[in-house]
Image 1 (cartoon, rainbow, N blue to C red):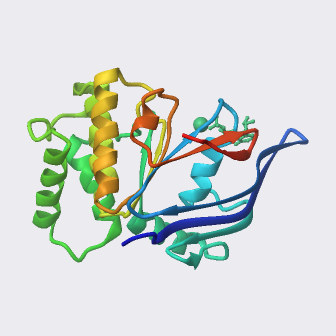
Image 2 (image 1 turned 180 degrees about the horizontal axis):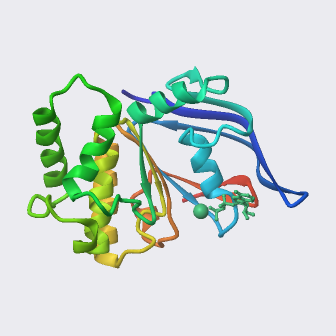
Image 3 (image 1 turned 135 degrees about the vertical axis):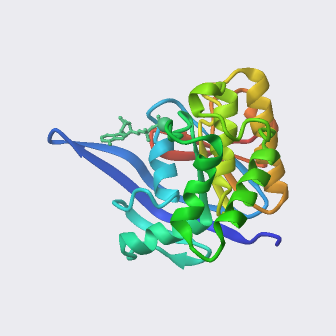
Amino acid sequence: MDNVVAIEIKKCSKIYHKNGKDIVALKNINLSFEYGKFYLIVGHSGSGKTTLMNILGLIDSKYDGIVKINNKEVNNLKSKELAKIRNTNIGFIFQDFYLDNFLTAQENVLTPMLINQKKYSYKEMEDKSKILLDKVGLSERIKHFPKELSGGEQQRVAIARALANNPNIILADEPTGNLDVENEEYIFNLLKEMSKNFKCIIMVSHSKDAKKYADVVYNLENGEINYDKN
Ligand code: ADP
Ligand code: MG
């Protein structure tokens, strides 16, 4: 699995139009991300990091340029096809966790499996959700609701949920922004381990420790990439 490209973007630009004004968020970005590597994207607030992540994660399709996932162009796909690619290939982790507060930890992890396919029985999916929650150290908390969990625990549920459909690409936008140092270390280590298992990890982080974990660091400044010497 050496040097296999997971996501590639070419000549990618993004302009937001708001209140009659144009905001140039990304300028002619060319990047590729390989399996088995941990990428870190750094940059000041407003430099375009989330905009880039939304394009890489097929959440935003209104941009100029080319995006390829597993060497397949996705630009002209319909939203239903994009959703399918997203659901099977990409796992998202956000700063605010975005768990469903009315579902238990286990039910949160089950949700993407239920959306994705019916080829597994409910029992198989339940077993899988337990394995994933065990993997993030939460086997004692599977019946807890988000409000009964600490921030670090909630983010670990979100990571288990991101892994529910075995995606090979993980996008994490400031995943430890709301967490203390201990939880941050736990989460960076989990992501690092995933990259060693041939997943492509792309993380935005402001943490000064994040660089220790990353294989490649990209620095975004005003919508442009500067290669960080690391
Ligand atoms: P970062 O994640 O690095 O803080 P963003 O990608 O969120 O940066 O934002 C990049 C620029 O685009 C900023 O100037 C921001 O204000 C602007 N922007 C982001 N989202 C929108 C939006 N939905 N509408 C208009 N402008 C936006
Ligand atoms: Mg952001």
